Every structure is written in structure tokens, then in C-alpha cells.
Image (cartoon, rainbow, N blue to C red):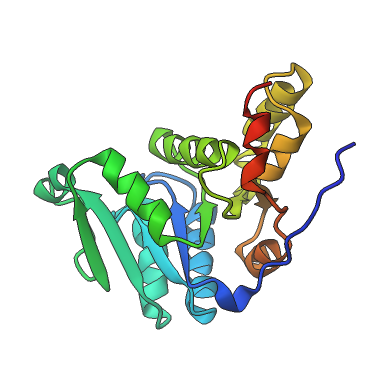
Amino acid sequence: MLLKIFQFMDINKVRSAAVYAASSTKIKQVYFDAARLLGKVLAENGIRLIYGAGHMGLMGEVATSVLENGGTATGVIPEFMIEKGWHKTDLTQLIVTKDMHERKATIERLSDILIALPGGIGTFDELFEILTWKQLGLHTKPIIILNIDGYYNEWLACVRKMVDEHFLLPVHENLFSVIDDPKQLVSAIVNAPAWDASFSKHAKI
């Protein structure tokens, strides 16, 4: 059993949070409720939202909630999505990148913590990449997965199988934290498992 070491992060030093989330509008209301509550929690704690600038689905919902609750929201979006009109137009700040790769790097660079709401392929792409960067020691920021309505249960079981089958080491379960309610966000930030860049030595099993 791996003993977790906690970093006890000062919530007052968390100025911004990346949020990865679905753009679908056909998902259950419980996910929209969670996105709205997350936006409220971010705004009330003075944490700027950094996200993909979308206006639909959970992406649009969390941004709208942040703004309605007096917070600030920065959207980061590639040029081709601007041309398609996929961006939210009332954001505090809009950053346009040349491509998806620059978008993801910019979101990570601007954020103190990284949060994943339920989502589809795009959300999982962003989540897996940011987990990989942390595994390799490219950042040490807390990654928090919002397991709303058990959405990530099967994925968490898959991670456990990766460890059991020796594709990952037990230490890699410290790459992220899991909560099931946005109200638990502050506690999750403060008590996030510590990750040192030197842990990148574990990237090779």
C-alpha cells in the first residue's frame, strides 16, 4: 500500500484553474448542475477560470456560472474554431492560438491547478496529456477529477488495472485526486498528493 504524501497547498495562492469539460448539450442535467456549481466555487474563491473558450455544453455552463458569480474567465481557442463561431463571446479574456497544441500548452501554462469535469474524447485527450506531462516531471500542479454521478468509475478501474498489470507504478495514482462534488474542491486542492518533478524517474516502468 502506497503511503500518500500531501502537499497542503495554500488555497490563497491558487489564482487560476484549468477546466476540461464536455461541449455536448445532450447530456444529463446532473452534469450541468455540477458545472454550474463548480463555476460558483471558483468565483467565490477568487480563482480565474482558464478553459477552451467554448460556449456550449459544460464548457459554456461553467464559464457562464463563473461570470454570473462575479468571477473572471479566460478562454483559449485555436483560430479554426473562431472561424466556426464555437467561442463564447462575453469572456473576460479571449486568447487565440494557431492550433490545438498551442491551445493545450497555453491553458496549462496559465493555470495553477487542473480540473476535469465529465467529457468526451476531447476532454480525455486533454486529461491524458496533462497527466503524462506531470508523470514526466514537466509540471507538478494538482490535477482534480470531478467524478460526477460516477462518470469516471470505469476509467479509475482502468487506471487500477494499469497498476495491477505493471503498466503504471502505484506512485502514479498520486498524479491526481478524485472528488464527486464541486463543494469538495477547496479541500481537494489543499490536500492534493504531492508530486515532485524528480518522480519522472518512475516514467519508465
